[in-house]
Length: 357
Image (cartoon, rainbow, N blue to C red; front, top):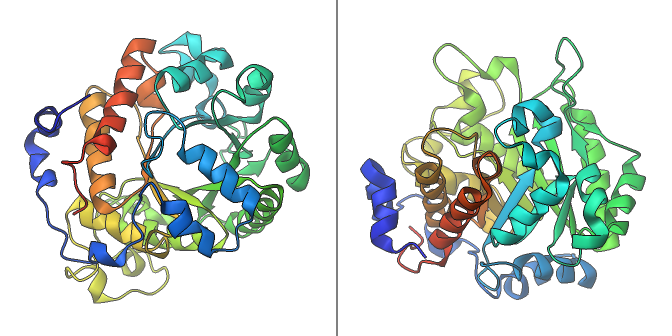
């Protein structure tokens, strides 16, 4: 397991992240991950006993079992980014069984993938590791590209199919800010209600998508205030866990792209700052102060995946987040290296010296 010195070495010139003191929203106001999080927080909600059971199964599997944190392997990129783009670096992952094997050997809490992937191996593996079934996707063949998220089946039937194949939860994406977002909000809200009625956990990929959000000076798809508001919409729809990109800017996205309303408090140090931990805490605050967990995404694979993954995990944990959902950095390389990367992420959450800021 990585010790604090090894984590600090991987952080390199960002090692001050380990000593940062958050002076925005105090950690005492947050519902932080813990071994008793479900009993302390989730049981106060309207979630049924069956949902609590599924949530417990998710939280009590893998190397992070009984910590309150999660490490999830997501592999839906074969649909979202094309099979060739996703699996050319390691063609073993065209075979769904190898996706599940990576999640198991990597000590993950769960594997999240498409209905097709999970169906193809469900009888062999659904009892060995929790499944999260992704129910909508952006298919890549329409031209010009529409960047829409479409349910891959009837709204209620696809959730029932996920339940029948043994999934503990469903996942869905909404492109907030897109022309199609109203329909997506309605579809996903209904699907989440059906999932909860069947006793499943719900995870929302909370993404922004609007050409007006990208200017010559900034990509507002990754700005702290707008991604935080997407989170706030997501928990309103009934998401138990929010998946969000790590914020990279603390600009006034509301004013700059003429969307919604804001306050100077978000930018002057009261609610956020330029520090990535403070920006991520703003995202968490918008998840009802942590009543719904915040997991940040690992991002694309590159030249320094291990250091980037550990850095993201440190930011998420110190902000008060629930964990990381990292796919391409893990599966676009040999199995042993993928397992090493997933374990390094988990080591951050297992290390008591990486504290809440």
